[in-house]
Length: 77
Length: 336
Image 1 (cartoon, chains in turn orange, yellow):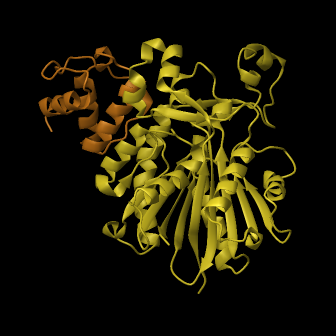
Image 2 (cartoon, one colour; image 1 turned 60 degrees about the vertical axis):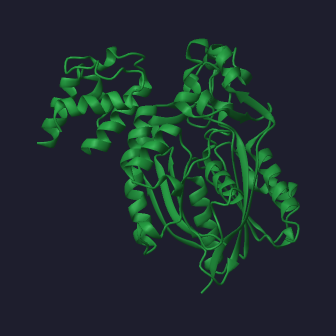
Image 3 (tube, chains in turn cyan, orange; image 1 turned 180 degrees about the vertical axis):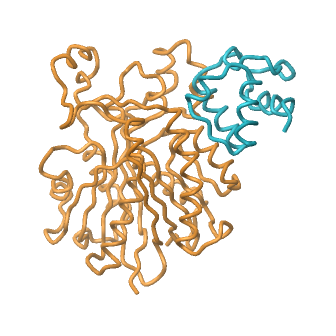
């Protein structure tokens, strides 16, 4: 999965986010209406598509979508 | 070969209701999020001073009135599962036994368990029957999580509701309750816990001062949940539990007619349904009008699934309980 496909999946999952507005440098924490519930949704999304179960700590250490993508790429490598 | 079967289920919901409108008054900024995040419209709340055993008593009374052909003096074992026992001693099942007017030739036992409690209760009832030590087991489960939730805790107040449920388990010659999988990981204890209010950390003057504005100054303790860790645990453990339960019962995924999981939350259930690739029509969800009722969530869901015609005689239903502990358990029941 390339990063654009990853972004599309995130946009699909978060209905507050308008499609086509996220970029690799977007901070997911700055996303419209970000809450602890969204952290859960992101963890489930990543688990579903990458078979990687992130910890809360791992997620807290990340800022942008690129950061998250890179972490997943290194875990799958 | 003796088997056991679920003969009848009844449940009781307290009259007091907490709606999203009620919560919206307290949490004005999050009002719109309640239904969207949790998929719950209302939760039933115990009356003040109503205990778990009171709700279990009312559920058992409903069972006896719905199932009048049954002679309750035949009950030879009573199991009561709750995380809100009446006393340190005697057992609440002894008190319930007397209130229900059961035979003196009936054993009684308490099981202080939560989310997986119904599975463990069924396994004990099944074990008593197949070992030839009982023929009619009454399994009562009830929980009053709202008694340990702080009034300002938005998530917990949205998620949990109180309830009681009664299940009659009987001896049968046919296949009924299947084999069980159990598991436990106490490292997760800290992620869902009721702080204080029991033996290790009783409440003290400082606690009373801190929570004097709360009903009964949270004397029963205060629930703390790390929602993210509970979700991670569920996503990690439940798919394996599902596979193990199938294997133990020599069944394939396709053989299961209905999947009834502990009704933890909308988020956890929908993530599990996706992860386990369970077809929507085989995945039964029931929390919109009751919330998460802890040990009662599975029997309430079963009763409603039967009522809605989604659970018929001969169907194979997979029951999975998981949560606080962490504790988990699973079985397959052939619906009688």
